[in-house]
Length: 52
Image 1 (cartoon, rainbow, N blue to C red):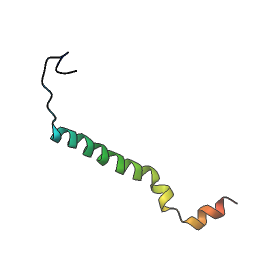
Image 2 (cartoon, one colour):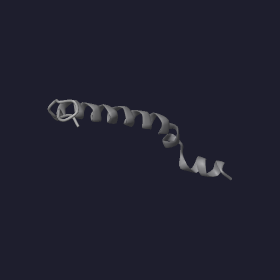
Image 3 (cartoon, helix red, strand yellow):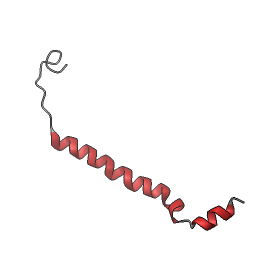
Image 4 (cartoon, rainbow, N blue to C red):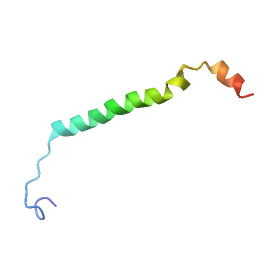
């Protein structure tokens, strides 16, 4: 596509690709922990007894 339509050469850039992937991981892990923190910090016995 880039060679025939856009008339440019293809060049893989590993540094920006790794930065994008690591940025996504760095954003996903803290966000997931922030949303799950309340559930993870609750004692299992309290949760199980509350359902009765």
